[in-house]
Amino acid sequence: MPVHFGQGRNGKMQTVYSTFSKLRGLLSAPDIAIDLGTANTRLYARGRGLIADEPSLVAIDRVTGEVAAVGVRAAALADEGRRRRVSPLRAGVVADLDATVSLLEPLIHRASRFGWARPRVLACIPTDAGQEEQAALEKAVRAAGASAVAIVPEPLAAAIGAGIDVASRHAHMLVDIGDGVTDIAVIRESELIATSALRTACSDLHEAVKRRVVRQSGVLLLEGEAERLTREIGTARGLNLVGDFSAQGRHRVSGRPIVVRVGRQEVATSLEPIIGRIVEAVGRAVKALPPKTASEIIESGICLTGGGARLHGMAELIETETGVTVKTAPDPMRAVINGARQMLDVAAQTDLWTN
Ligand SMILES: Nc1ncnc2c1ncn2[C@@H]1O[C@H](COP(=O)(O)OP(=O)(O)OP(=O)(O)O)[C@@H](O)[C@H]1O
Ligand SMILES: [Mg+2]
Image (cartoon, rainbow, N blue to C red):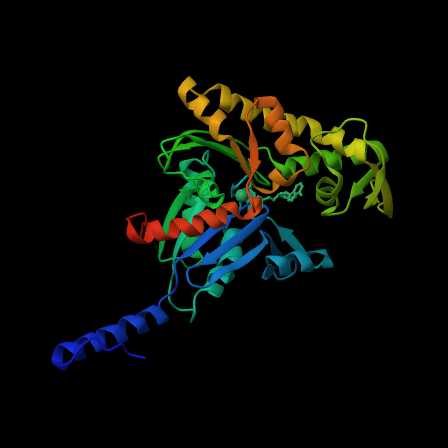
């Protein structure tokens, strides 16, 4: 419905303008924020809310080479033998450009109201990504349908999403432990004043569990089983643990299906060196800070985000090792997308976009 501002010719003009801008608003694509993660991809469309939170997976038909499905549907399809499953990202960055485009295209399309308008897309990237990796992300996002792109650092978005006052003159530390990358950043007055990233994260925990089970029992765990074991019985505080759990696998030599029993302690022991590397990196980052910043961090604490923040005992271990209070963000796996969503408002008013 047109809105009437006044009378006469001027009023008519305003009515026409208002109708036109409303129509334009209806027909144009909403701005989109994307957290393109190694394990999960999340999309937020302005005015529409969170429109995707799905595995970063593409299922490709082995015979035709066509994309059969992406996201949750790809995860469901992949075991059918006819399709192979591709992870477009590795260690937080684009590893397969075509697969990344295939993943993003339908998701971006889902956000556009009528399908033809091209949205502006704000995407997040780890702080250690090089120029080529940033260029690959930008290229993928454009090829998937973006009219303009803004790339922002992932831990800055995570901090905003975790509810940290990033504009404060007091420094804050954010540690995002994802599937492929652990990103550590110190933020003051909306700027990253120190960063370090480690391309070791949850996927390495899963690999460690798989390796141990093969060594111990000669069983290759089925897809997703090491991840499930890590999530359900994994802990960063693994001493004198009792009990064992069933997992499905195949015998390494004969290939026959097997249900294997995996001990709690066995899982904890396999996770230990990887967790050690992550915790050490956080410790190094704290130690490297100038005294004034370090004392601010001791006061404000460390905020943990990403799926790794949910690993049992992780926050406590980092706290013990660094001597700094650690808090886990309220919704750690959605902190990045929640922050990126808020950054869209800033991007809309400033010149963050490149066409
Ligand atoms: N409760 C849990 N315990 C242990 N690990 C968990 C838990 N919940 C999720 N994870 C792990 O967190 C990872 C996913 O986290 P997240 O979605 O933050 O990663 P990502 O954003 O896709 O990766 P990245 O940011 O590194 O590119 C998965 O490896 C998953 O197994
Ligand atoms: Mg992430």
